[in-house]
Length: 243
Image 1 (cartoon, rainbow, N blue to C red):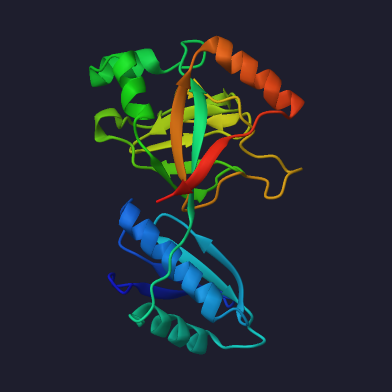
Image 2: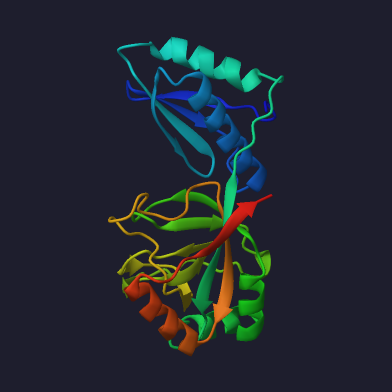
């Protein structure tokens, strides 16, 4: 559990910011979520909320019950524990994606710059099981780690004013999913018909940080068929326990 040297900082007067080494790493992600689970279990009387990110975990605590110095002491003690093994359950979601040119509006640019054919970009992109590192900048926007270095590609210097809902993009070493129409600077290579974020459901976003995503290529006709199923409420995302 205590495999990293962590940095603890106050975040205002109501939270502790815990920082890991600054890199996108699945082992760090696992360590963050194991630590989060252990804290929530052992300090349930004091914890109000936990917010994981790529390299950090923010712990909001009840200042009426415990002081900052005391909560940090308890958190550090928990991280040093070696006598317990906690397992977190990750769910693998298989997400249908249409990589047709009607959606993949940045394929030509990426293919030329990377000297990789569109077909190989699709093959590489859809062959990986990605980690959901965290959810932002829009509600339900999934930041996914694990993108092959072969198709890392720089974010656009001038963002588009309008990215279609369900768009799948690449920016640097990340890939992600747009839950709604919005501006954006990621390179768009496909589109998924699924509802990534729906305020009417509980939880609104089907995935959480620590889960897994795999993209499944579909053709344009299948995308249209699934869109109809989703509108009728008859489509369920394929998923199962991972690991």
